Image 1 (spheres, one colour):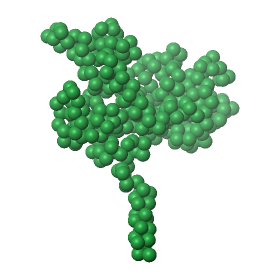
Image 2 (image 1 turned 120 degrees about the vertical axis):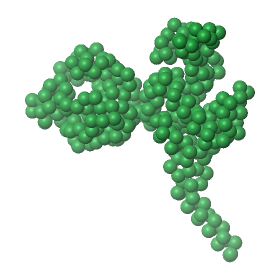
Image 3 (image 1 turned 60 degrees about the vertical axis):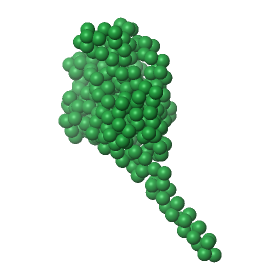
Image 4 (image 1 turned 135 degrees about the vertical axis):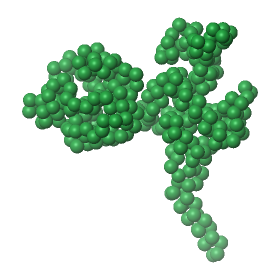
Length: 343
């Protein structure tokens, strides 16, 4: 009987730990990441915030590089959790070095896949340095771009000129990232997270279609939700415009004589890339924002037949966007998380 009581008590302890998320893991760590990586979450997450890199991307890099083994060492002399070349084995120092390198690559190349390629193959020499080291002209990411005669922004054009190992490395890391995020998150070109501007909504694709609003091709996607629903920034970026766009800001929609996009917030999230949140009732910020920060609420200003958010992406200058030259709208679905597209 005493043995039975002891066993039952032990079982209750285990169940309690499982329920609290503290067994084989760390409180606050994402559930889809292996425990070999989440054991380092207490050090990884603060560094991710410091360097403004998605922690799930860092976790994906660690998984590919070391699988979470702080003693890992490659044939090329890369050490530790993040496999830093000639780097320290001490976990915290190694994490800081690897995350700093990844963050630098993201800021330098402004493309996630190029940044990962640079992490594996090296960034390569700048044009100024090539003159002093001509033998390394075609090394690293910059070298591959030179060999292809392409700009650093055109990753797909020089991808084939990267080393074979790197061509396997980049999709492997991206596959880990997709798995860890369960298809609900992705990255912008500069490495920041991307999310939907609404937490809950109904949606039928309409981009490029004639929906009867006077435009031959609809410039965005309409996300249906009640008036007053919080609208959140889809990216890390800067609010560059708040006000009426292409008409009047009369409330009540088309039946009340309202025209255009109504009250809008425009967020710049990349070079020449802008997110437009339209038909708002109000806006709440005019500063730098992080993905998930509230920027306004759904209303019925502008040409609208019901409560919804018109969500659009512009590629071009802000001046051309405000004038609506009509040539810069791109399909916002390319920025939708995978889980939304699979619904």
